[in-house]
Image (cartoon, rainbow over all chains, first blue to last red; front, side):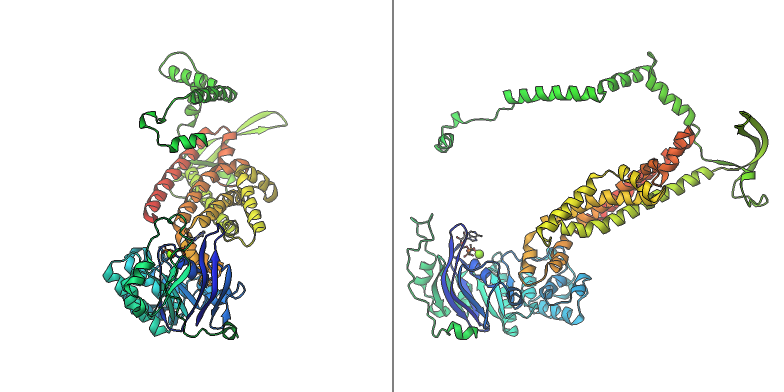
Length: 274
Length: 335
Ligand SMILES: Nc1ncnc2c1ncn2[C@@H]1O[C@H](COP(=O)(O)OP(=O)(O)OP(=O)(O)O)[C@@H](O)[C@H]1O
Ligand SMILES: [Mg+2]
């Protein structure tokens, strides 16, 4: 269970990217994060794996409060699929996937690039789950197509058996058919591994199709939180509506959230930490 | 501020400031540069070099006389024919089986001249000489091989020094800013010491021979390689490194998987260049007694044996050309 409790983030230049976000993600939930560009989606995600520090508020994963001290421990149960993938171009597909277990693998094993057969087979299993074939295994990552690289990044993310997978626009640059199939792979991999997924998308129709739950941000605040069926056309239009007069200062929200986040029963944060 | 607003105000294009190639500033700059260059050129006798060289060219086509050309022809007349054979007095050799001489060698009668200090006179005695037709060539080739080996070990030791130092001198992987500064400082220090001078000192410490040469090469080039390694590590793309470290991998593992694969081709090319350079440098290190073919060159030069010197120069030249050829081939393969 991943809990955001009143999380805010103000960048040094004064930009308030995330504002008082309180959300709880259930184990195994496939949760899509929506919102216009600059709404704070990437910032929210980067706070979970420590790339960005919250200015205020708490993030709790399975009863563990995220702090600087236990950051490295918590990072091991969180995987991220970055918007730009960040595969190592000159490394083989197999080894790119194996880099997912670097934090857990023995030091000298890593240095001489000798991974146990068990781990290598796990990598193969994940790669075939996301639809790659044997002949891709020893190719350099840079020699694959964009969609194939996306699948390698997904396989890498699941390699360490994470509790939470963060995916920042995993289908940003793919054609519709490929997008659908990559999202399918992601969802199936999450289901077989029992991982919670927090995934940002820019395409409303994919969100409606794949999400168990949609969280929409606007100007850093939660604008909508609920099942896809509650996301009606009017809400969709307002979420992406541009305030023409305020383009320059888009961080002072003029559109008030129509629907307060529907959070049926928030667990008491102190209880959860204990 | 004032000009800013003027430019921002969208002036009519006819009034826009266009590009001017020659301004008073350029003319002043050229004038100053000319004065400085003239002064420095005179300091280094560049004017005399021009005069002497033109005189030599004129004299070559039969006009006038030139010291330079005389020098060239003096060396040329003594350098040829190039010395390939070795001629040794038989009585100075031990265990030569006259029945089974080495391939193609033969015994020759000759006179041996010896100088006696007491009487200040030369005595001439008849002696037998063993002549090996390519004996000297073989000796020079062997010394060239030794020189190549010196370059090789200089490069290997240099790599062993510069790899750890390079990692410590990479800002983003150095364990501490102080360590970073120290590693950078040490690398600069290594870089700033020319091989010949280091070799001079090392010959004092280790005595004549290749040890001094190899260590001198290693010291200087580890400074060059280490800085290159460090800069390459610093400039490697940050994304993959961030992806691995934010998953909880420690810095050394990140270095191994997100940095090394990226920098390896450049490193290999650079190490290859250093190896080539080390061999070229090793040929002259012998001049200060630090081993290799340069020792023989210096010895022969001091004895005015220009025909031997010519053999040595020829072998060095051929080696450098062959080296260039192979490393070009290798480069084409790795890139
Ligand atoms: N390092 C930073 N320093 C200052 N401001 C930042 C920084 N990173 C992001 N921001 C600002 O924070 C706000 C939210 O950025 P964020 O990247 O989270 O948006 P996003 O929702 O992911 O947008 P997109 O859909 O375009 O990826 C933006 O206004 C952005 O300019
Ligand atoms: Mg983003």
